[in-house]
Image 1 (cartoon, one colour):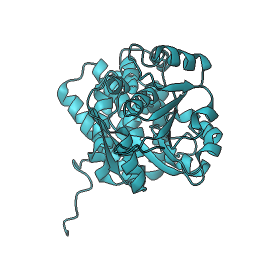
Image 2: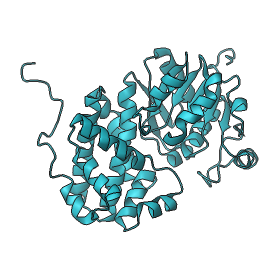
Image 3: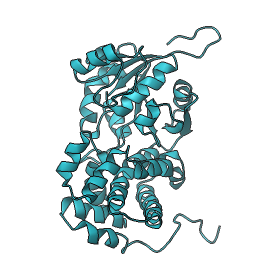
Image 4: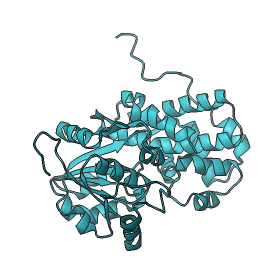
Length: 346
């Protein structure tokens, strides 16, 4: 960490995960003048990035800042880093964190992964708290489609942490003319919003493939927001979080764009492909498929009404007919339009 006279502090960043978002985050950070090390699993991929300055696998055709150093060595990426971003799929998150833990003590460690761990129902910040001692933990989430970010299209994100200084530093590190960073203290709500919206992106993808109208899309988006916030509030999240970028902002971006992996899986299902065929075509992890099973089980345990989740579960895991279930998804919905209204006595 250096601070030249009259300039912003320059940090050393390690970004664990050479997927599309890790790559886009690396590019922002390097363009802002920070030293950036991008950890990828394959030495071949690392050499390709260092030579061509392009992530050919995940973001082909998009140039990366040439000062980014890619490496397949975890220790090389983490040694001396001030800030560590973890952009690893949910199924591998804990194992990578366990390997990295000896290097993470007292560092700022930020999860960008939008998912829920199977079996434990842990969010990524909870895994970090369990596996890393004395780290300063935060999460990053929002309407952040990687291809648009690396193309420098204007967007914004949310850094959530109870550590106010961490939020301030991350805003300074990542803010630029096309990427704005807002802060939030509701870590659990921000993370849950990021994980849950992937489920509804699959629903909207199916509906779009079936040719649903704009009124239907609007209804599904609105009821998706009500359903995910109802579930999250039952788990302790702040309902107001879902009115911000990490909630409705991310929901809209993910549910309406064919850049969204989860939307594309849903669209393929709606066009008659099996789940396996849809995932093979995608070639990347669609977190919503894994999250769906965990959320359905938890919702049943908590007695939370989630008709969209139940309907999608029947399509994916019980091989129910799509065309009939899309209409039936809404039938058991609670009749209240806007939830979490103030009591009459207030």
